[in-house]
Image (cartoon, rainbow, N blue to C red; front, side, top):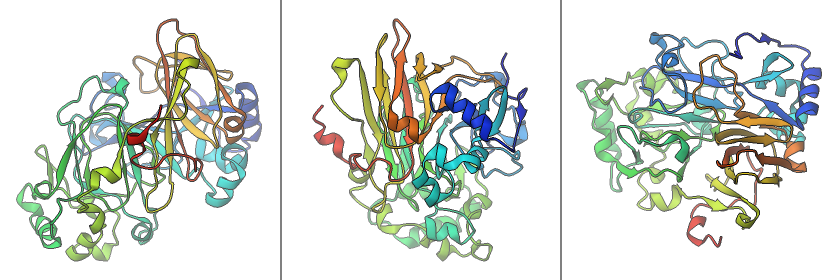
Length: 421
């Protein structure tokens, strides 16, 4: 077995390794799988991780229910390993974090404009995969996160069909609050925290989740994601506050509600209630403003491939991220140009991407190196990446996500209703 852990970690003088990898691959970086556990959730077993490795971090750390893609963002877990949440680049029989690579050669990898503005890769994506629902929670906005020295986190969801052959226990997501809900009702739920189920879901509305669709969710909006395996582009932060005290009989500690709030506010119920974006949470047109269905980029079916927008739209007037799903028919080769750098994961099939092999594994060991994840530099994306499906029978399907303001031509929420292709 080709293991990631057997590769030497290097942290300095990375430029020559980066140059060599980009030249050999055609502007691409091979990434190793990045696994993340969550102590308060139960793994959904659809990440293709070997069942013997679900608790590879130790039972006390919880099961592995997430895989992070092209991440330079640490996971905000208690007792985490030093590199938890950080993606590794593998080059010339060695490895180094994508974070270090961008610190060394940021303009070369993500482009001069993005590196000058953010001095990092400011987004990441993940699969999260759970047997049941996640507690009703929110992610703070920029202003609130800054109070604890962090950044806010908008996010988006897409439910890839290849990872959702089963829906698990609860394929429904609660979003926001029922129109007419009052702040006093939410405050009462907080007061009832230690009495068992605090009843926050009684104030919310659940939507059935369908593979091949998604949602765009801004900060400070309550949501309790359901049990579909989810591809989740998001801002490069791991802030959150859990507003639900009991999930499927499992306790959610108060500490997970207030972990990203100022310590002086940990018992201030009015502050915690006012963390919510109230208008967005009680909006009677919530689905119309947040639901996503794929929109083809162009009419290319006759050429043997289809590229579709799966995450698009703006949050409070800003494009934080976008994502596309490319499907290439067996035996087809196509060149795809994009406006900026992206992280890519293969969800089905095998083939090539410039000079790199792509292969979607059936089962992955915790320490195993794979050929299903790639980071594409801005220069390679703009020049055009050649995708080739080398399978005689199966489509090649890849997901790729982009950073802020990269795709100004992306559709707005609701565009699926007027799709002309």
